[in-house]
Length: 444
Image 1 (cartoon, one colour):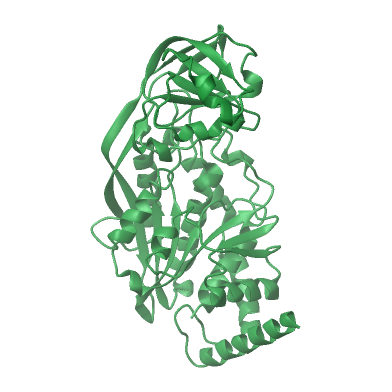
Image 2: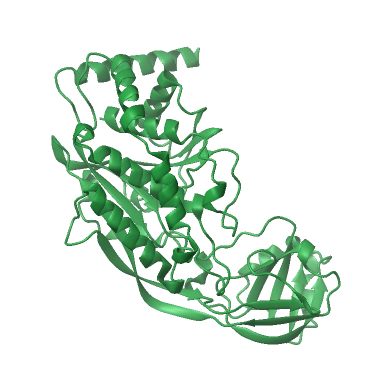
């Protein structure tokens, strides 16, 4: 019964939208006598002149290439990526809000630009695959005793720590992971043995720590090892100039109202001279899709009624720094944003899409669902409530209506050295692209 009632209400809303569109196009809308016929005609047009998967794959390949160094501070990888995106924006014909597409702001973060070496009892481990060093770690060089505590219960940890001499590494099991949050421990550092594939993060690198935490693949770590030899240098980079890349298309009838697409182009960078994190899925994929959408709407025949802004943010991996800076220093008033869609992790889709904030903005979510159902595009449109895990959030907490959409499916690489362009399936890219363009054209 509730499903039937919801269906009736959706039908009523669709009829109302169709009536309002007769004779004139609203913000993001189009003229026409009915939504079904209009959608059918638009889908046919979109499939012939819309998405360009080969272009998207080329963008991802470029952004995730070794020359971009993981698109973070080391080797100025993010600046290289931002220059590439600005060039794409110029080719597309996007306008800038000032004299360039760039919005600069400062980042401070710890880095490991040189060689990293780690061995246990003369058995060498490979950085990135066998081990990861916490991003807030200071540099170190030397050989240290290993003290094993893998079988220690959390309520006995103080006993395990009591014999420390400050010149040894504690080897802990996964059950002791809460030790990461300790301000200091009476050891030189701690090694966490992990059964799962290792994934890195840099968000804790905004401040330098006092000790060293290392994640190690359990199968790579010699059982009952006696000594660890470590050598690497850190460089804490202060007030590095990072930059967002922002362009827009002027709307043909409502130029002062904006629909916005965002995506973060940065990733984790390098951990040592020889190890970089490509970040193809996270988030070269979302950046490339956003750019592909800009190409589509920049065509004269696709010019939207509202203006459309396209924002590629840096600093997301370090803590939503680029989007937070923009939201605090907007290039046009935030209240002029009719709706914002953030694209992050979008290279799958075989199981549909997840809409963060779908529970918050129900009318827009129902529009997305109804368009998908009518054209049978992606497998499923799921929804969740608010989350602070991507670049939509600084806008959301300032009252901007927004979605964060990511795809669902078969790809599992996340923050690993294997998140490479050639591995991305793009299993529902065309369908997802079409759904987004339909959503824009029917949003009021």
